[in-house]
Image (cartoon, rainbow, N blue to C red; front, side, top):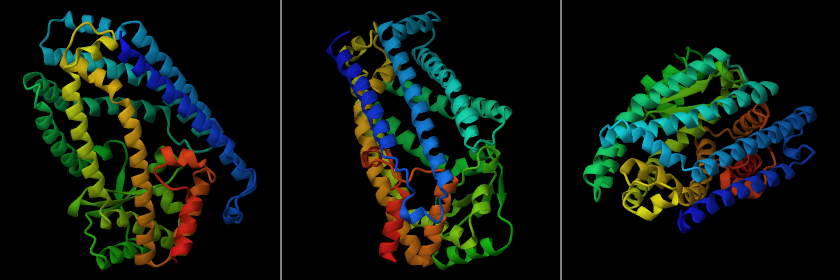
Amino acid sequence: MNIYTFIMVGFIFIHYIFKTLLDQMNIRAIQTEVPEEFKETYELEKYKKSQLYLKDGERFFWIKRTFFLGVTFAVLYSDSLDLLDGFVRGFELSSTLTGLFYLSLLLLAKMILDVPFSLYHTFVIEQKFGFNKMSLKTFILDFFKGIILTAFLGLPLLTLTLWLLGKYPSNAWVYVWAIVSIYQTFLMFVAPAVIMPLFNKFTPLKEGPLKTAIDAYAKEHGFALKGVFTMDGSKRSSKSNAFFTGIGKYRRIVLFDTLIEQLTTEELMAVLAHEMGHFKKGHILKGMGISLLTMGLYLWGLSLCVQYKPFFDALGLSEVSVYLGLVVFSFVISPFQFFMSIFSSIFSRKNEYEADRYSIETYKNPESMISALKKLTVNNLSNLTPHPWKVFFEYSHPPVKDRIEEIRRLS
């Protein structure tokens, strides 16, 4: 171990303290009185329930974060990573296969450690507040489907990455970057038709006022669609949502069945106009561009990291290899990911305001958008008064009160 060990461990611990303080500040920002804007929508008892939901959630994530902090320190100071490396090398496989074996064991271990927390969050916290609709059978099936899907989609790409980095250490990152970019774009076409139906049932929206309104709006604003579908979100949760998948003419509108039950046609249209605004304002393409650029920077950094022995020494690794370099890089990159997440959140919140503005300008029904936001907030027990620092560092969407104020200002 060396100075880099203390830098890595120091950042991990400081980040843990920072997240904990941020969560505590968020809890203390709770207001006992319902904000004026929501007094006609949020019943006092339900508002109190939302505060309990927030507290239980923050407490749960603190326990989970503390557990994995302990696991991380235990792994670092017990030479477990090096011992595992010695174990997989004992099979005398090729460098690429050894790397696949090693990284797969680490990923599987993390998934298994995460299972008890997922079970508790789903069947205790979400159940307690009336959100969970998932059976234990569905939970288990989702878990194994996730493993199979990760193996099917991830292992070929990981194999190619390990091979390229091993064969062309200096410029392999460029090849990997190009391959990952093509692969991610390809998945945007495949996911709606192949991957997502593995977990949920998608049914074409039946003919009626809502479908007629959607088709007319999409045609008026030149928005090509492959179809409008409902998703059986109620199979897992009573929470509601709407989203678009796919790109180009393969775009699909997907509405949770719970959302259709909770909102009126006008409210649904206001929400969908908001989602269409993300496409019309270029948010999807901009997001993809930033993601690919960031990926390129990370891969370039990885190509440097896999050749720098002191980083391996910092984690107690006696050998230098490409696959161990991926593990080392996951520690080295953490500070950069933290700062990138801040910029990502700022960018995302800006996009949400722009999409709201698009909905108001094109659908011209701001009150429906406001009432939809209120209903979604109440039904999902969302926090109305998050701490400003919590919003700044972690929120991908502006607080609902701020969104409503901006909608009223624009209209």
